[in-house]
Amino acid sequence: MDLSIVVPLIDEAESLPELTEWIVRVMNENHYSYEIIMVDDGSSDNSWSVIENLRLNNPHIKGIKFQRNYGKSAALNEGFKAARGNVVITMDADLQDSPDEIPELRKMILEDGFDIVSGWKKKRYDNTLSKNIPSKLFNAATRKVSGIYLHDFNCGLKAYKRNVIKSIEVYGEMHRYIPLLAKWAGFKKFGEKVVEHRRRKYGVTKFGWRRFINGFLDLVSIIFVGKFRKNPMHFFGLWGTFSFLFGLGVFIYLTISKFFFDKTGMTQRPLFFFAILAMIIGTQLFLAGFIGELISRNSPERNSYLVEEKAGINQPHELA
Image (tube, rainbow, N blue to C red):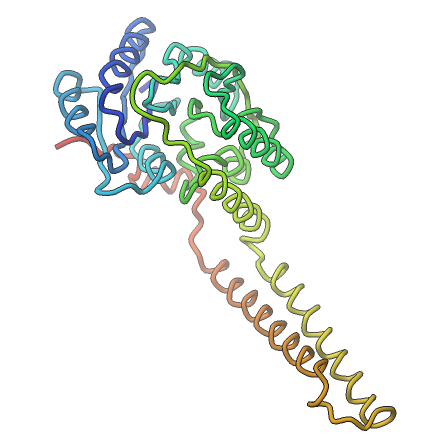
């Protein structure tokens, strides 16, 4: 199959027929074999009914329905599991991403050799102060810590090689960091394409300040996991050792001070309790690192494309 189009959505019933018609027109004009995987992330409107009706008229459409809202990352992860195309395109369902960009994105993957091509909405129609400035700060911070120089990490319009999406697991709010997940899985070629950004035609934006708070926390989490996931003792053991030695040093100082300089009882000095606390924290951190090492060394390898293929996880979830 040439293409899998993965469309995560929530409460986008009005836009789905027009989006589907647009995608199908592009697919037919370019003679692609394709599938459209729509993942309903717990919509409260009639989005699922619309998907079922679209499916009746077009067998290329497949649907996955969540019983409640799990988030965009979970929706993408399930869509990736179901995808069978050689190239996988992700796009939002709100008609702000143009399906006309798909042929060029596919060309950049197959002919230019990129593992991931990310859209860059250079000219936007939603440049509100509450969205534009935080978005620029987020992208700048992500570029700095990841070493991947993309302008718009959060753009929903992206293209992937098949083995990229089969080699990563997207969870939490990690859909913003898929290029970084791919980098840690061993993929190195990242491309970028300026894409058209369209005004929202139906519904309301799902954007909120909470996204940036969660995004920042996930960035800290993914940096930590990416750096220390295979050797947690390097982090916990290091700081645990420093904490324990600091507490031990203070304790030795207090002991010497009691016998030679100050006859005040050790337990009557606040520094004594700081020393005990530092030693306890150091011991706990060291044990956390040790347990983390045991878990890390006994966990199955998640980044094996061949193993996943044999396990059959790429089989699509179709409508009944």
